[in-house]
Length: 228
Image (spheres, rainbow, N blue to C red):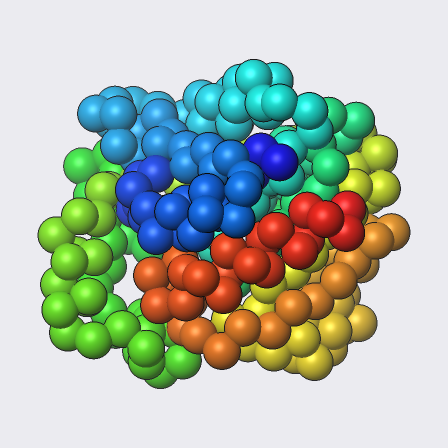
């Protein structure tokens, strides 16, 4: 099974190294993506450029792949479901939720010189980063890639209602399945409220389980692909 891996903001494909190793040991083919503007040296990339790279990977995959999005990239994974609803077997969302049509992709933090740099750890204090030690945090900061403005402020466009038929597994790291269900019921996550096949999987980690729980996360991804 091909499993496409899309990391969140400031990260390139190397964020998945440990998970990819586990997936290969389980007999699957991981495809970690380094997106335009987040690892390829381009400072002028747009959200459309990143989506095109994801769709190229979907089209090049063997069979119908599972598309995995982490954090803000949950919206990219969902955009892939919208653009290729018949060509992917399922979507796994880790620690994030898909933005709705017409919403900004990731306009969360201050922009400087045409990009959104990593804002430091203060916004992620508490459950998000509690399982990262100081060494891991320093490594993250050193490797963090500023997100181009054209990505951060890109507008999500969803057009195909068939996306709601694509099976979705939501992996809950720093929050619980019960909390997510409350948010969905309150109308805070309208895209997932309309998903026809939605499962929740808890993982005892902070916001970046690909580093702190790679083996467990790999098993979750394989199980999600098997169920879809």
